[in-house]
Length: 100
Image (cartoon, rainbow, N blue to C red; front, side, top):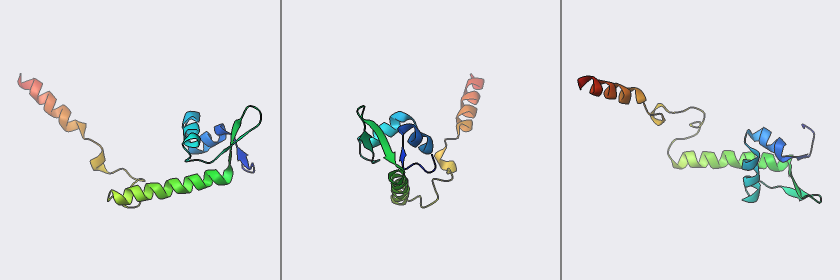
């Protein structure tokens, strides 16, 4: 696969670690460029187009993070404030039922 110019949808899904349905959706909505070949109109994605898509996805993510005020690198680490602390809710519920 490393030297292949064109990738199958299964190859693309493997590279992106997503499902075939997600790759198909990317092709149909125009986010990822591909071609249909042969009588059965099978899809192929040129490796360079996949790399372009990945670069565009990085740029889009960076812009979204910048507009939300989270800054670069925020996607690499999860902010503790993004994860609800269910321990307090469980403790409060347990204390409430213990009082009954």
